[in-house]
Image 1 (spheres, rainbow over the protein chains, first blue to last red):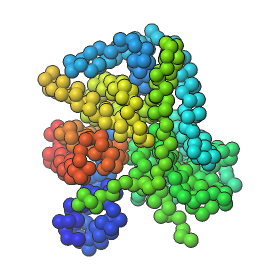
Image 2 (cartoon, chains in turn yellow, red):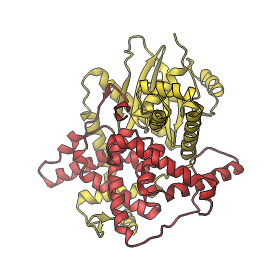
Image 3 (cartoon, one colour):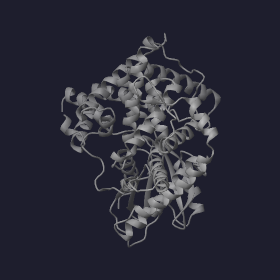
Image 4 (tube, helix red, strand yellow):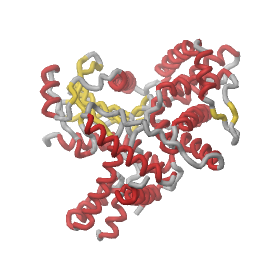
Length: 275
Length: 210
């Protein structure tokens, strides 16, 4: 690979979007060519700056409510929307706020509807086999754990980016000793560890960050009869990835893309001692 | 070159999504039943799409550069998404929703172009989603954050959009191509141009006079 080819593929390489062969070739080139290595470092630096400093605008607290009430107005046929110039409705803030005040009963209807829907979903996510039904329940439990951890400022019991702090803490609380790695170099800094309770047993939850998103990695001992095939699924808008390595079950849960979750898994596995 | 890009990350991905079933229930007779079914349709829509509210707002906020418009666009986009929810069969709702947010944002931008030329910045906002840091570090981070934001805000829409999708949302090239309606082969080159432009704006000499 010459310099021109390497620079042409550099962005794809930085984004982890090249195939394995192109990756190897470009790595070899960067190793040998100082000029390209410098360009690579500067690009990487730019990306780090953006990911560290560009603000992630979280939705204002009342926006969720406003969205929900406009959806309910939509199905009940109330003319809530004002028509803007190009013919599509733009909801005025005052209007939706007024609706939220004048229609408090909707929140109860919403709750009832949510319960009905949850039941329908539970019944309708009809699994093809017993094991995938078990996966469904487990996925729901894992997502609940993930969401809970983000909600109540209870992301971590032990907040540390140091694996040598997190691991001993977990070891004293659990009857197994999961592996703990900081993956900052791979773009997944360790935020801390937490105890969680999944499938009627205490499990370890390691919390990692990816850009402005969090990944919960749940770990507990694997049972010998279980399959070792990796599994990914998407459930309730979250990505889940499951794998088994040696003695442990791993479930990663996050709202990052499945590509990022795959990278996360590879980064984690790279740290495990080869058997 | 394009052939060397990975087509898909995850093999053997299992799709558990079955919301289409729920949506299709809605052709039942009787007003009361219809209400309930629509209620559950809303709920299943919300279950899949509300987790992406932050992503929707973040994209709209970066594209429109002000809070009021971003709120309007997110609300409107959710309504549009709900109306075409029957057409959603994928397992990953985020790119699907972001596509709608993006289109809604652009129709507002187009409409506003004749109305107001300047954009308001809310300078008092500062970064909140970080762990405890010392006041000095906080200040430094805010300074850098403001500097980076201003540089990104100066970029053309299509560059700002692709940087947000890649670096704040972490979307893959394939997902970016879907959201920004680009040919998959052009995502990498547009990202390269966006980064080059941003780098230019971040150079101390060119960026300080803002």
